[in-house]
Length: 82
Image (tube, rainbow, N blue to C red; front, side, top):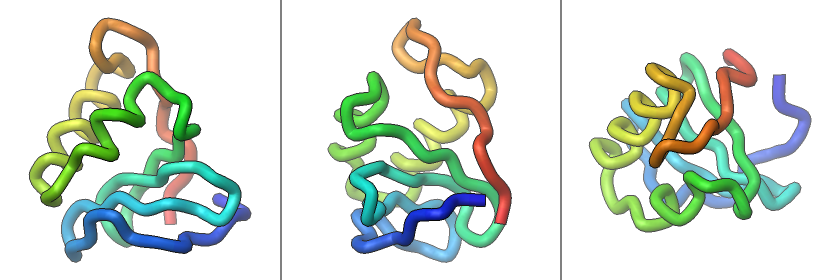
């Protein structure tokens, strides 16, 4: 379980979400089910910060989770469930 708190939703729906944390990370995933947390310096961060819809967050989440890769580079793995 994550120890930091969400401070700002960048994209919010009761489907997929993207938010900033009080420790300076980005958390994204399926709301109320599973989430991934990455540093703002992570390879996937620029694409996440460009998201404007839950569908865009979902596409990145699916790519990260299905292959553990994003843009040909290793990314985060599942870090927590709610």
